[in-house]
Length: 367
Image 1 (cartoon, rainbow, N blue to C red):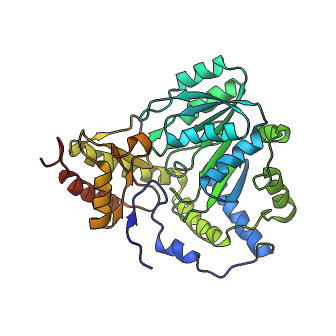
Image 2 (cartoon, rainbow, N blue to C red; image 1 turned 90 degrees about the horizontal axis):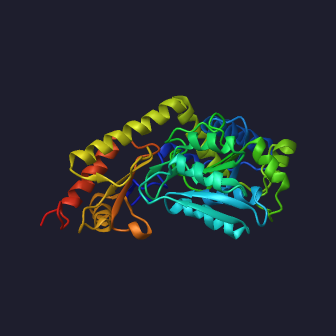
Image 3 (tube, rainbow, N blue to C red; image 1 turned 45 degrees about the horizontal axis):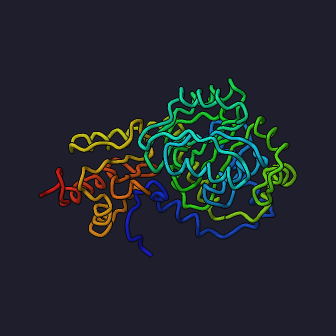
């Protein structure tokens, strides 16, 4: 079936045809050596993407599954955590901490801004009870990029465990898990790695393992001790994996790593800079103070309905942009430029956006 539109959303992203074709290959049995080889190749590739020598686990789930796995394997009932939030997805950490019986000390920044490291430092020094800090690399709802390198220095200097949701940023925004002293990182397949949804990833270092061994939280499917044991003993996953998605992941990782992570990050940066220049040349404003390379969030002038623009572009141009979320609905339009998209693709998407924008009533649209 032919797609109804090309995805320019902040995930899932456009998947190239050669990667989609991997999904139609015959299945191997996940308890045989053939799958062990595939799994090992996936983990080896992801370690290079994460820039880590620690453990990397692959779950059959959305990115939220990896986030829950992080909380389930670190916290015990009654533990305190700092949650540094600059958008809707950062708030998900709060919900998870509370569901597992923890206390969430919120550091909430107005949407559009990133979390200032100095404010995180003040929060850490004011809360001796909080052993964990949860935050995001790339906040997809607002396009904000956080300074994870500075966060890592702060957390390590104050003996806190830093847990980062990099689901949108992994592959698009620079991240050096080990060098930046990040203890746990969560990622997913459907963003800058241009795979279909359905796989999530989590890196786990020695400091995280120390917490995991002490954690008394209930866990079964998400128990990383089971994943480590099965990998060490049999080179397999403990539960049935989404085998076709591993085929797609390995092909995509091969392409990403052939280019190299430095070039992959640079390519995403070039796409972001190109689109943001087009936005500025059109007399429009960015919503985001320190934007990610994964997406651009355009602020709508007073009286211009961003949702109507998204709908028009979808119906007329067969391209899907993204609305704002929650209180930002209608107020912004988000354009994803991660994964396999090119400058030509982004240019066509912005042309379609601008055409629809100029048809809208309001100060910058047609009267």
